[in-house]
Image (cartoon, rainbow, N blue to C red; front, side, top):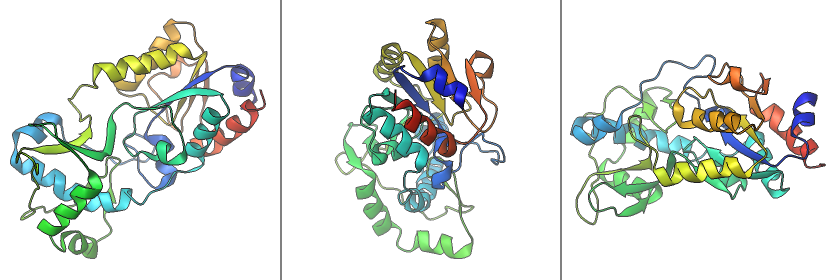
Length: 272
């Protein structure tokens, strides 16, 4: 920790976060130590097969109730404090849980979108996930309660509840055109919008150093920003419990939880 403080003191930081920062809020990650193997639904599966969409929305209907109640933890709060103190110029998050925004962070790039909004793939109409929750409950009264009564339900990072049977679940369509709706998040197999990626690169360029918190950097979506920082000569500090794909690129590696490390960094770096 002292080495990280010495390295980052006086620097303006860009912060990149992943699922590991939200585990202490009760949201599991995909690749952390002890995480069960998961196979998230791909974009192609979702758009091409009504059965996949039924499965997705049935599981999400259950999982949303849990994830919607989660709250920021000490790691999220620390990132918000770094921004408020002028230590962090902004934040790139791979998470879709909106916990950084709830913690008070303002300069947030939601790289993969958020599950708080729903978009129609045909007409582009948007609505909130809260509004959709009421529609799905009306179409499927008692479904979530019945699932919860059977067993404790495992929840994945994207609000996907692991339940066996989704037979009979009724899917809601777009209220405007009757088209297919999906969460406004980037699915596996789908590309992050170019404009969003460019804003993230610009944020890294604006900063003097990159702080990675709670990400295994297993996919290029986040790893590219580490490599960009390295190419431009910016130091990279990675805080993560497990190994990451960029460990060899890191200027400094801290093997610890974000809820323990980030508050200390926020306190010490704010002193300048």
